[in-house]
Structures are given as C-alpha cells and as structure tokens.
Image 1: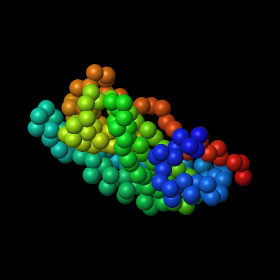
Image 2: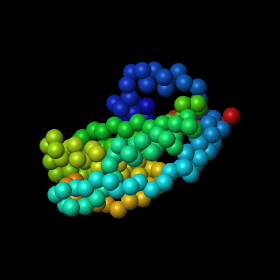
Image 3: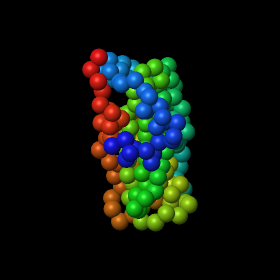
Image 4: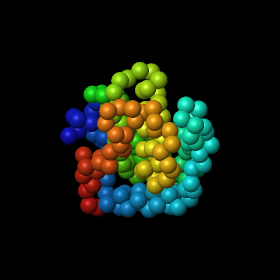
Length: 174
C-alpha cells in the first residue's frame, strides 16, 4: 500500500513516513477535536463573483481559502491541495493535517472531463478545489459555476469515497 501512495508523495515525505512514530488513538482524538473547533468558527461563504457566460454568482476560491486558514491555523491545522489529470478524470487531492500530532486525513475527488485543454483544466481544478473544501468542511452553497465542467458526458460529482492516511498506516493503540 505504501508503494501505491509513493507516486503522490515527495521523497522527503516518504522518508518521513518511514521514520515517523506510529500515530496513536490520542492523535486521532486530538485531530478531531481541533477539526470540530475550527468548523465551529466557519460561517457561510459569500457568492461574490459573477460568471458572465452563465450569468450566475459563485463563491471565489481565494476568500474560501482565507476563511479556512482563519479557522484552522489557531488550532494548528492546515490543508494542502494538488491535482492530477488521468483517464479523463481531474483528480483533486486535499490533505488536512495537524502540525502538532502529525496526523493527516486525505480526501480525493474525481471530476470527469471529456477533454483537457488549458481552459477546461483550469476551470476543473478551481471548481474541484472549491467544492472539495466546501464538502470537507461542511460549507454549503449552490452549484452556480459548474456549467463549464459539467459538459463532460458523466454528471459532475465529488466522490464521497474518503481515503485516509490511517487506512494506509493504521493507528497503533497507545
């Protein structure tokens, strides 16, 4: 299983995982407590941008990221997002991590795409990042700007399948 993750991790991250202490049940409890405290401070995201092609409003990614940082950083939490395009899918990977315990949780969302042009790819990446963050942190808004991405033959979905580091590296009881 570690080998399957290696294509997504840098050499430094792989070296850390090999040498890292086993995570305890307390690490998971600490992470979840911080997560809930951060979520309590999150308010709704304001739809402050207009899509001129579809004449619809949407919440821009930057204010969403700023709001999440304001909620997460005081708890010692943060997130990183990356993307990968393969097999007509735009894969958005979001990792939420705790700087104190080293515990992290990974979420993977797949967005179907008929083709990959710079414009289509950029739209899918932005759309996927925004809606992945909204789903992970329970921030609801309407789907106003998914029109360009949803032209793919399959319906636009965000995978509900959640993959966690703990699935790959089981937590050892303390």
